[in-house]
Image (tube, rainbow, N blue to C red; front, top):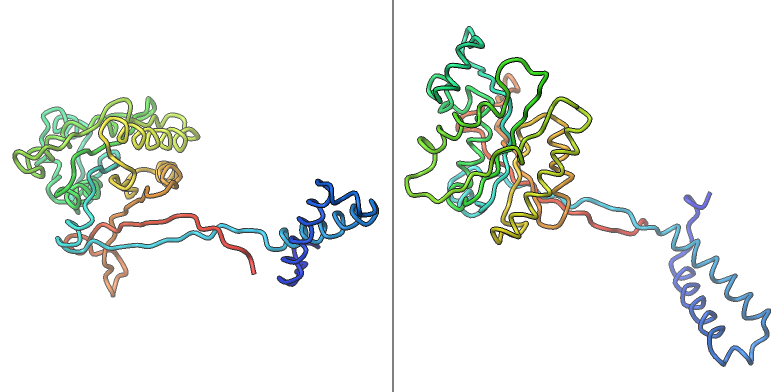
Length: 286
């Protein structure tokens, strides 16, 4: 098999050079002084060796990945981004026992009662990761895109339904007075969960459009924006990562230290953003 066949480097390199020479001879007047058999034979012979060499030394893509934990204020200020993309999931409370009834949830949402929903406790709900992501970049943050979900099949309140109470909490408890921070929300940033197979594609399109519009309308380059992929369903995470494969388009997750006994995340002050920078790198196979 050619895939397991290896040609020594010096033979391959010489063959490539001689192949070029014979092609050159064929293309200019010097070719007239060489027999056709000699000339065409050289092209075919060394061309085949060169082709086999290049095939055996084909390039492969090796990802270049670095991860940086932003555990303290100095690191967060140093790596704060002007643009942030976060996902808002359908609300869940991990601490309230018993949980909210549908009517209690509806009442709290309609009245924007974020205290009843316990949003200030970032370990109590699945909104915590989005809150921590915003807090980490707050020193430089100017634009925040909040991607929500909707579905005609869901009963009760959907992710998009929680948007106003979430924004009320951010503007009241998180964003400093006088801070110029623009939130980008609405139908253009909503993923329809009715058709599961389209979730990845729709999310990918939204994130791709965000980068394009941010550059066109706000002068933000790719390196100015970070996409947090902690929230959202798996298909949304995949769609976002695939949209961020271009140069300087990095992602972030909210990580945590783990309890040595239980192996579970500690959360609280022991959770922090992790910036993941990656890029494709072409390398020759050995």
